[in-house]
Length: 407
Image: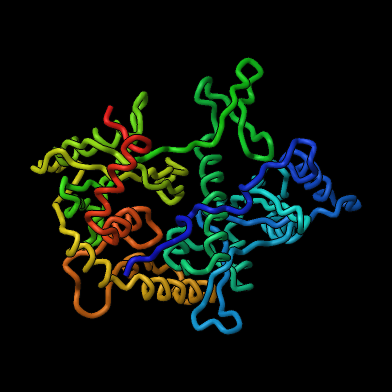
């Protein structure tokens, strides 16, 4: 069955809703100064601010898992630790915690809380894994947490968004250690929200990187077939939308048309915006992609697949895609993944790769299935499948003046 979400996975981060003014004690710079004061051993705590820290190791956030009261399945939680705990854990590794190693994530002024992330991937910090493991805390792949997230659980969706934002920032810090202009080292500024070249002759400012990607469901003129594709890296029988990076000097609509033509030989006319999704689980070289979703209406039908980019592309009827949505057991995959996260946090099956299980249906194998509800592709496809074909055409024509482009 398809799953309808109020917001996409990794969207809806509650810590990003407002940025305090520079003079506000919860602002990045002011909070960092308070944090540095608290790190001094002899300091008396002059502030009521409390700090929570989320450690990451090799791109994996710290997590815990367990069943709450009335829960039938385990739920994962981010493994927040206090500033003093973080300082103590690092001290046990022979590392002194400094304010420059922490990255500001946001705040909750109503609770006097400021949230931070820290990367503990260094070899000197490897003993942290065992120490945290003794408290049933474990570093878990963000993709694993994504699949294990209960989509109806607003708390879990918010935590997933926070973890995605934190991972994107930390991975960006990891790949931007040197100035792209002069080659000198960069230093964090504004509590890690940006960086700056350390050279007095350069002082170039560097901001977090976002890579925009268009993802489109191409629909035929009659609005009863959709063009789906397969890449060689996909698990067997999975089909999805076309997607591609935006070129410099290109509009979003132009990127949709170009990518569709390059990969399948299909010419696209109208392009209708659907929604967007941050995607911080791509390759480390691209800390956060922004998936911008569209419906694209085909002007031609003959497919000519670019075998360098795709394994296959085919037109699929609305009924075939609807059956694929009805067959796939997304909820079962989610609860299975959640149970395995719990096992990992308890120290069971460490090192096992669970990703192969996430898209497997029970019983008879369906001839095709589409990505789960954590991906924008699922919502592009399911929203098309669930609309009435005639109503869909009417809605498309109504939107032509505002949301589409024929340029």
